[in-house]
Length: 385
Image (tube, rainbow, N blue to C red; front, side, top):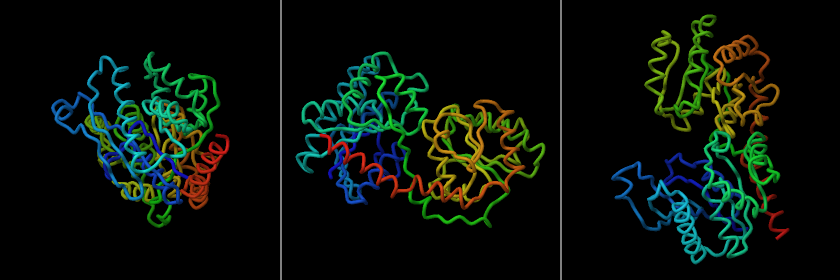
């Protein structure tokens, strides 16, 4: 089987986290014996200023292990005429496809990761070469109301010709059915990185701390978490909260921590490597997700893989992940409810079995079940073509 992945965004190198989940899935497929390729136009925003204009404009081939990866570098020149930039992006993708086929052969199936912009590209390839495609939708733009009026037609046409529609959570699947053509979207969760599978759980390393990990954006709700934690500290004055990640909200969060006199209880750790994230989760009593919206929540399965229970807001994705015994849900954007949820966890820690939490997670999200489910979908599409 030969699968060509069409991501709407993708890492430019092995240390680039932008679209890293797509790359990890490509690696998992390749390890199973499937021939895998990636084509990804890499257009820069004019907001980068001189760096946008002075960057590359050529095609680039990256032999990324067993993944044959093709980039077309360029710029989104027309931010005020985005439809024109979409046409240019698709045209660049078609040129990449022709280069790919010339060197790697014709793929059996296309796999789109997020409809904008890779959906219109897959549709054009399908029309010209009759190659079937499936879609996995990851993006939060639908739930956040960020889809522009002119984009809906492109989304609906791309969806209509897909052989299979996958969404990373039930909430996203339901939303896409409502917003697009009314077609059914199958829930197909993301993959757990092998690093978290191979790292053994050791209860002796648990510290008297909670943790949270995400980019420091407003939508992640870290201000709500810190305010909630201030209430928790009133009852558990020695408890620590370790927050991993960096971003534009850092200065505001530092000021909030200082104003609440939490300097001895809350630490902003900055950007962490995957290994550091894994260790932080392994050492913590509980992982807290305070987001306003998540289409999935990979950090949730990463925490569960370390046997770490999760207190999460009802933000979309985690509702498809957490089962009884994995953690607790609380109302979104409510510091009192979040504090109440954390306190409930702390009062009932003995009810959470770390080893069972880990086992359930790995049985569901690790590489083998993920690849088996996905290859069965590919084969079903090809059998019907």
